[in-house]
Image (tube, rainbow, N blue to C red; front, side, top):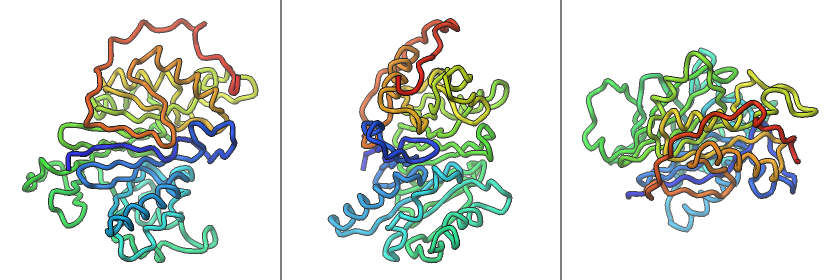
Length: 332
């Protein structure tokens, strides 16, 4: 199946925002569905996973099939895990759900993820998830292979000899980073010469990390990148808002610069601050377009087909003067 599509189910950062003023972009936290070569990959388990859960179950029932999915966690902050207890396909023993994520504590991802679902924080535990048939660390220097006749996801060293038929498989790589508090794992998914990079919760470091990320995201067809703050908010110039420099998130121009440095063909901005209403996010989009033609705003329901061609980004415009920084307050 020569398909490679991306669907956004949650684009909000920090916490869900059910307000009507946030309706057009959506109020659910981070969750992205990727369908590549017949494989279903879910990036993060924010509150958007609850709606995706229902959709996957309905699709499987209509097709008379089980739900097979790989769930990749970037990290374990609440806005990236709060949908997991409501991921109903994971409770059906007929399904096959595999979980992968970074070891952020030294105790291993399987140990850490259990804290998300356990009493007294939630009435059920991971033991109730009879459809989960694998929980594993996504190890540095490894690649995850999916499809191509493999009976299950295969995580193996990049240095290992190629697997028969590997060129037809979906390939997932990870980049461990300290660019977010408590650390984070970025993902690159490749299939049939196309690729996407998922970099939620990222604040590029001035010295280290920029080159490594640019190489990791080099010429990606789609870069999904954190853009939580406006520039004014980030630097503490927005009334009644704290300075957020060092909080582990990007402002709009920073995300555009990351895409340009990597030579990404397209950029999807996501992880908007929960205080930002639709009008504020609209303004973020207008400013992003002035810095990078390939930028677009992610919203719940946005569907992107990576098998369709996309124009290459143009040469970046000259840098803006300080007086031209984003200074519009939220909701203005």
